[in-house]
Image 1 (cartoon, one colour):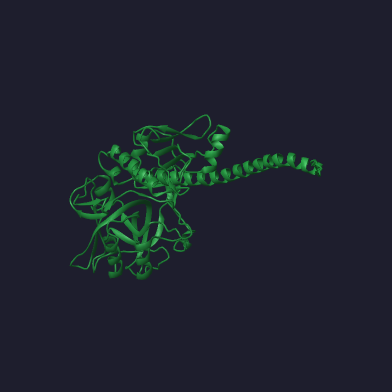
Image 2: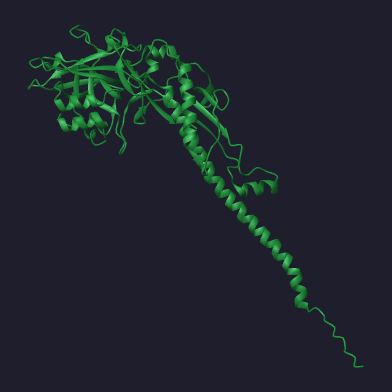
Length: 419
């Protein structure tokens, strides 16, 4: 019987090395993949954090707009109502925005993560810090810390691996309202929300009783119209805020017979640019001859004016019924040699809504205007006073002996992020 010899196989040195390299490659691959995962997570977290911050900033600004409304002009403003509106609006703003494709899923609650207060100057540092208070709040602080990882699988994996939470995002945002107004300045493509309209502030001679001082500041005006902030409509009825009746020049009257004037901000008092300014506001180009801004912290500002309202201007004001816009106050008007125009000495800024536009039998234009509150980022601010607020309120809208001393304006605010 033929015997078959046995063949013995031995592993080569190359095969032996391959057995060692394979687990090393796996370890290196794991390290590389872990590094990539960390980078991806970091990029994701940066993007999500930016989106969270933007989302919360939007909520803070939306709430701030609700804190300043016509309610502040009433005899006894209901600040609780304003804070309730601010809370509702802030939550609606959060729901309308997403983070990493998902809604942020945070409910803002007053006193918890939604705080109302004021910015108080710190004497030692010269800076201002947030002080929580429900007494006439002018600042809002929102604190958020997202409790989930917004469906980020990398964050889930790394959190389990490192026993940390790398996927949470949060933000703390403050928004503040400031009404230490010196003037207005339009930006490129951002006009001042203002009418080219001046209103007689006061008349020491007693010829006019329909002045801002008597009818609005002293509350002698009739209260026959109201504005509904929900429907944005005007209706007949009382709302606790008086109106003033503005009247143009009668057919054969003098310029001083009117208690309102159309102002020439680069329009040369022509109907087409006036209508544009009434409907769209005052642009930087319109203020070319005023160095791009209107300041009221010094002597009166003389502005070319006219008390004549053409059909185009009347229709434009009619179209703007219910819209809140900045207006100007003047103390004196001087007729030119032609007597159909003149110069108005403008002294301050206010804000109001056109409630109705009428034409009298003598071709005189009548505008019923109610004071209102507006926020705009075109406001030029001064540093706020540190004096007692009660003393400041007495000097609202009045020029002081010191032209550099800022005064508060209860009609116009600037809303901006402070943190």
